Amino acid sequence: MTKPDASRTDRDAPRAPTIEGSRQRERLRTIVVPDHDDLAALLADRIVEVIRRETAAKGRCVLGLATGSTPLGIYQELIRRHRAGEVDFSRVVTFNLDEYYPMPPTSPHSFRRYMQENLFDHINLPPAQAHVPDGGTPRERLAEACAAYERAIAAAGGIDFQLLGIGQSGHIGFNEPGSTADSRTRLVTLDTITRRAAAADFFGEDNVPREAITMGVATILEAREIALIATGEHKAAIVRRAVEGEPSQDVAATYLQGHANATAYLDLAAAAELTRVKTPWALQSVDWTPALTERAVVWLSEQAGKAILKLTAQDYAEHHLSPLLARSGAPGPINGEVFNRLRDKIRGRARLPARTRVLVFSPHPDDDVIAMGGILRKLWENENTITVAYMTSGNIAVFDHDVRRHLEFTERAAATLGVDPAAVRRVRAEVEKSLEGKAPGDVDLPAVQDLKRVIRESEAIAALGAVGLPRAAARFLDLPFYRTGEVRKRPIGEEDVAIVGRLLEETRPDTVFVAGDLSDPHGTHRMCKQAVDRALAGRRPPRPEVWLYRGAWQEWSITEADVLVPLSQDELRAKILAIFKHQSQKDTAPFPGELDDREFWQRVEARNLETAAHADTLGLPEYYAMEAYRILTPKEAER
View 1: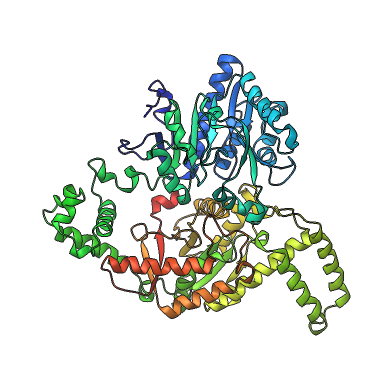
View 2: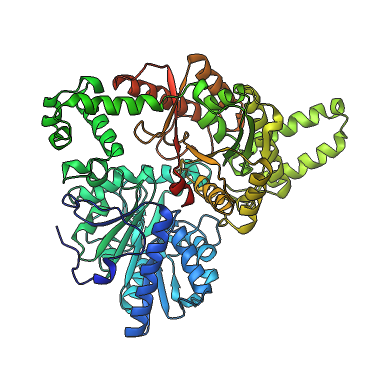
């Protein structure tokens, strides 16, 4: 394994707090920070430093740039610093990693447009110095265009700092499994996993291009410094392969292990499967805090296949947990301590809030019942005053055929409703004309966007009714950041935060529920949480208690959760029926998430059943199903 460059003392003390631990199994230098926002600040620091150093030394700096949701925070931070006069891009040259093929530069899916909207249009980078592979190049000229891209990088003096993301197949750029270490800029066929992961951006996998132009592995490895960034739970498994696995053509990111100046920058969620995070006791002595003890004993129970209260001294010894056993000299006290901690997490209706004010923030008009359908009913039965705030319209996730279906109904029901049938026909004709000429991902007419918004709103109200809540509980915020008509959204702005802040002031909640499921394919959950966090930060004490829920893409594990809410078979069935009310998302949702073909209700059913089954195997009381929640500590909430 190539060791990191020991001369890089300027990087040994990053400003963001880092999560330390033994790195003995890590083949790639790795920095782990608590939150994705910490990564944005940390990487922006480094890029600004490199720009200043290189422009002072040789008159220019060459950056290799990446696209996707992961670098967005970095680009926003660079824009902020440029506007503050902290960094000058006039002598910077950029080369992007890749581009879909074929792909016109003006397409909403093109990486050229992504870079313009998210960075280039907001800084003083001369247009001639920004290079992105041209997805509009005729096929017969592609080979020469790729060679020219390589020559342009060489003519610029090579890349000083290369920013990389990592795909779920382990690709860097679009260097899919099987890419060789000597590969150069070229046309590649995209892996099935890559196309499925991109389906959300293209309104379905069938619309994702099958090819792309990408820098090669050799081109990337020639950069003088490389930063591989990853955020979110959905990247944890492939990150472990890249950082701790053997170098392999099957995972192109493992080639970075041979680079003398490459670093993986991870948030804690993406680092979750690294040995120093998941099982740090296997590497070094640890401080046996109650939380770490709980994780270790649950892990031991899983490894030994025994309930917690049945674990023996031999189990501890055979799984390298003798230091934990030595704290008390016998397994009984430790087993009992952890069992009691876990048992106390289980809260039936009697132990949930009652006669208080509850505010639920739902990023889309179905996240509330997907994640919280069980607890919502219990909270209503406990006579809480509940407001469910749908933060975005969710209109881009409605298929055109649903609009046609609702217009058909409206036209047929016009006379019964006392609506002018001719007016409905005129609107329908206008909508039909726009839909016929629309390509996947094109922006809808404002009228169509409004119709799709109303479809989602009506479904949300029906779903609330299915869990017992009145329609008056629903509030539709329609935050401005989402109103682009495209998958790509604007950054959270002051107007978004102000809308959330006004609702907090109006409802004065005792408890706030927020989506903590940050791996949604288009990043809306993450952005909505940012808006809530900023609005809460501006409130005077006392602050509400903040509960984080998950559902569509992950669930909190038993050790991560602070509250486990048991559900009966009837309660889980009612929750699923509430999810069914979102008919536009039923059967085939436009944004199903990466590598999971199941419908949302199927995922929810499986996860709620699995949580209860896992609790049962640990020896906890047996329930049919369970929802899981985290409660933020005051310190966490302030972050």
